[in-house]
Length: 577
Picture 1 (cartoon, helix red, strand yellow):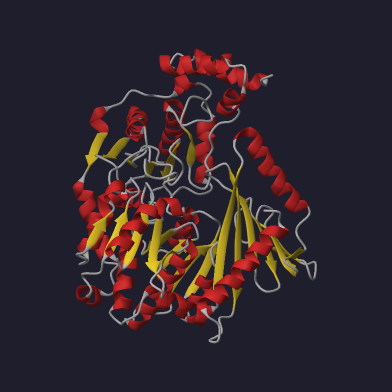
Picture 2 (spheres, helix red, strand yellow):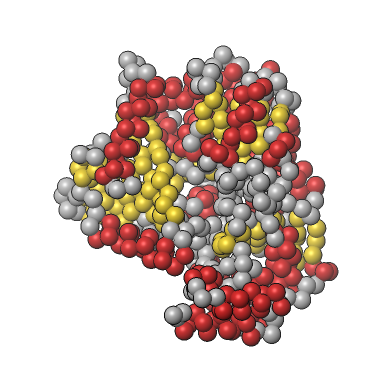
């Protein structure tokens, strides 16, 4: 039996005068099915902003990405902008990636914005998310929107909202926008009549301006010139990276770039991969094969909206390996800070930022160079918030998160795989010029700062029942936290929702200086860190494991890594994962 509230919502949609015929037919079909699961999942809730904005499976219903949920979100955003910038001319930049229906959703977005009197700066074709962030600042816009579901499966699409600083919206603006969206009681309140005179098309002029800024990040021009033939393999995994990553690499002098042709063409079905996510080895398979075939120096991959970077390299046995997001962020941090020091650029006012689920080795590196470091909640918008708060006071070197996102410099206010690819290629050239490999530097970094190893376990729980299962698991761990993990005492239990750190040895509680967030952390005697959080953009609960050990000269890389992997395996067993 379907809950009355769900059936009532479906009927409201069905009877709405703005509903198109195809959507009406689909709703009727769902209502007539004997199995009500699809109907319930489509209407039991409204899509809400998470760590990445609005995101969901495409289809009909209030819990799906479609003309009406995108239109409603845009109408709510329009109402917010008009109240916030009362009486002012308002400009919003709009971009989209390679996903199915993205041009359609971008057009719906532009239609609603212009119907509300807002000027729209719409990219002529697909572009990376970081370029949208740049465009907001470059054009002096009051907001930005990018249509993307990042690395999610092909069934998904999404809608990220940016503020006037080029960063994704944070509190209180995110909630204020949702309040405006939720105050729309009828779909007929959405203004869909597009005003073409208010649409301005963006093209290569923004590409050139963005690439000029990216070029200024380079720290090792002479080394690049000597290593211009560095053999680079790049795959955009059917996404937007193809538009700018090769150009960025060429702009600083790299001449030997090989694109994986099978994945070069934008394709919303991501036909060569199960998931378009550089975190997944399967998505990197064709890139690895190409890199091996031509004996490349480095392999890069970007996700569909080109804000995440995947890296492959050869170990000291000549075997190809994939770095995880923590290793990529740590290596870039190590290179950037060390290079800034060599060039005399460190003045005592520089800083880095990373998230609470990212490897603590980033902080260890910063401390060794007397560079300030801080942590934020998960989501790059929180890193961008720190950059905004410190703008004009201190200098941002870089920052990252374990989920394959990194940002160099501050002219973009979101993770940026375009500049990250450039900087990683430069780092590879810099060390190769000294007769060293990136794997050499990985080992050097671990010997200096401790061998940190991390793994992520994601459990998918779909639909209403899945959401309830995730909530129950979080509730159980919150009410009865682990006291021992892998034979070690848990010394600190951190609940970011209540904003408290509890010392399990003394019983003392400490208040946290973070916004409330549904994240739990368990810290053991040896510094092992286990973090648990529901995803803000996918039907998943995520478990982040971080273990570390001193890396003695007498130990080999492989033996130390194996011992840390065993430790994580035992932790998973303790947590029934």
